[in-house]
Image (cartoon, rainbow, N blue to C red; front, side, top):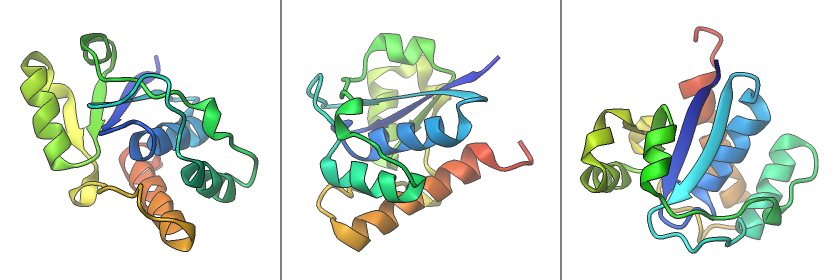
Length: 144
C-alpha cells in the first residue's frame, strides 16, 4: 500500500506545491503526494517561476495551473500518513492546530525549507533542486 504524504507551507503555491510535484514525479509508484498551506487561498496556482524551475529539473513541461492551492484541514491530517512541514515553525503551528496528529508531523531535514517565493532565475532553480534533494533523502533513497 502506498504511503500518503502531505507537504505543508504557508500559501501552498511554492514550497509545498513544489515538494508535492517532485514526490509525484519521482515516487508515484510508492507514494501518494499532496500539499496544503496554513494560510492558502483555495485554488491559487503554483507560482510560475516554480513551475519553470520544475520544467528544468524534470526535463519536460510542467504547468503552474496543474496545481491548485488548498488550505490545511482536519481531513488532511486524518487521511495522510506523514505531514512534512516546510520549517520548524510550520511544524509547531500544525501541531498546535491539530494536537491529536502531532506524531505525524515532521520537518524537512537540514532545518527546513525557508521561503523561496522571492527568488527567481538560478537562485530559485537551486532552491527547487534543494527541495528535490531533501525529498530524495527522506523518501527515495534505495535503503527505504
